[in-house]
Image 1 (cartoon, helix red, strand yellow):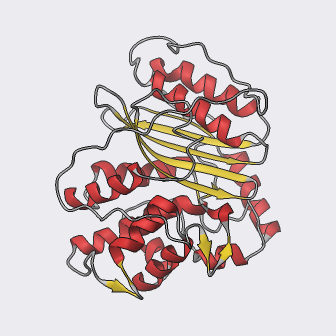
Image 2 (tube, rainbow, N blue to C red; image 1 turned 90 degrees about the horizontal axis):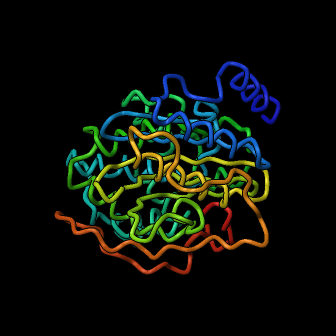
Amino acid sequence: MRIIGLLFWALAFLAQPALAADVPPHLQPLEQRLAALATENPGEYGFAALDLTTGDMVSFNGNRPFPMASTMKVAVAAVYLSQVDAGQRRLYDMIGDDTASSLLDRMMVHSDNHATDQLLAALGGPAVIDGWLRAHQLNGIRVDRTIAGLLGDDRDLWDIRDSSTPTAMLGLLRLLDTGDALTPQSRLVLLDMMRRCATGSNRIRGILPPGARVEHKTGTLNGYTGDVGYLTRPDGRRIAVVFFARGGENRPAVISTAARAIYDAFGTQGQAGLPTPWTTRVQTTGATLPRTAAPAPVQQTGAMIPHTAPPASACSLGGSNVQAQC
């Protein structure tokens, strides 16, 4: 499997350009900065960002597959909520000894792997999630295994199973935010859980300005760090963002730096360059990334999933510590 994965990765590397085509002129400085950030730091990175109003997009290694790890839980939540919308399920259906709403909350907010596999089993397994993605014409993203199956296999960060390209994940985020895959009420439920994500505060959120609104889901494996979601600027402009990283030692710092660059650049549409001093080489020691305060709760309408405290099994599976999958 390792050989097959490496072959797939090599073919993708040769076939796809690192930079996106047809980047709007006002985002070209950002694209160049993201490329420098990715190439001047150890490891391999895939970045992508999309203005959900204008459709302007920028990426680096946007068509290269990376592991999803726990970012795949966005798709699991989407499938369950879509079946709620279709009248096939309810948020308060019992799954095992818990409600679906509680399992969804634990999966998305605390990255509970056992809750994820309970939901997957209730839905019919990974093939159902993968089929839903295909039904919505989402290619370059695939769900093959349960979390238990993924963690039980030999770790291979180039395995094409349970992988996504940054642009494919952008497609999923765009579908969920502006498409017809979910009703407005289910969309609010999903975004509320993503807004309360309790993992990976040093990634997308790391150095954003105080009060920046973020809805996201993290993913982590040994040697891999990911974070995907939405940024909302003070003017209401929404940006879907994807950050995948494998190898190297300062992945969270690189992701937080890229996220801040994207946040700033998409707020200067039509202007040249980035508005604040910016560096590409990220220090792993000797510097502390400033933490931002948690954003104020967003007032929303419709039914919300009850907020749950992190259970003892959060980020664990069957009592075993698998923190790397959070």
